Image (cartoon, helix red, strand yellow):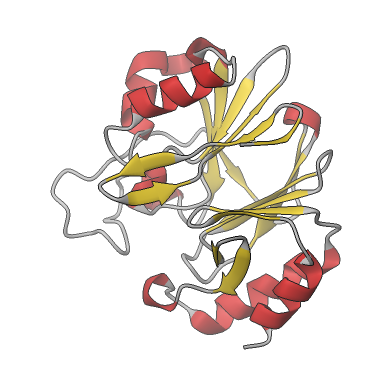
Length: 220
């Protein structure tokens, strides 16, 4: 679903789960925010082709965190695209993504996905790609969890910090959060942003009364 020119919320299906990575692009390059489950590289390729972006235009991957449904296809993408891809993540989740430590929630999985992280991100960092991306360190779901604010389109990529149902933000998904107190404090960071659209990795798009909805779920 197109959110703004050069901003597309993808919709991928995996064993009954619907997830929503986000694709950004301009004339020079494309940026993928999260990579889906293991084995979804072809789904990503097809989804990108549908919006007119060739897979070889992909130059940057930003990982919101270490969970398997976000880093799953990273190894396959790196195997195909190699040194052409620059991978970003927060320092606190980097060792899990690289495979130096077992994944916090999926540590029992044999041969979990892993891949390089070229650069680590910090709170309030600004990336110049595709009109500007602000990094927001929002721990709770994982220690190194980041959300992303797309400046041109006033879009919040909330990822797993919140979930939504039928366009309504329902708050924190309690079964998957590691530190609930931290997660609630993190949601309050969103209240300082001018947000017109929220993309939840589980649930998709929310566009109505964003500030009121976030205020409500952050006060639970």
